[in-house]
Image (cartoon, rainbow, N blue to C red; front, top):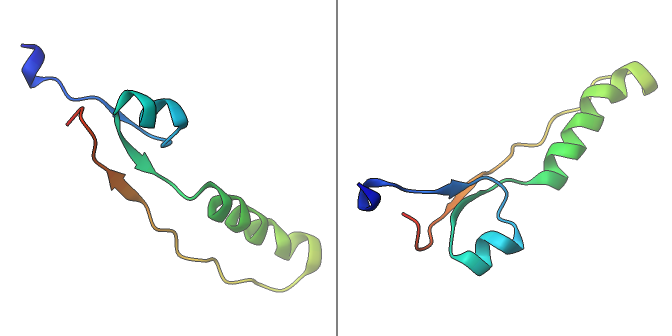
Length: 63
């Protein structure tokens, strides 16, 4: 039944805000920084500490 359906996005885009879609906010910049930190030892030598990432559910009309 339609009332049993929930839609959840994954990127908190402008479209999800406009349409009222529940979404997951994920820290893209933090993910990119961690990707660099994973590659850095091979490029620069030495280990680098990854930063913890925090994901958040942003509830809107679709849940």
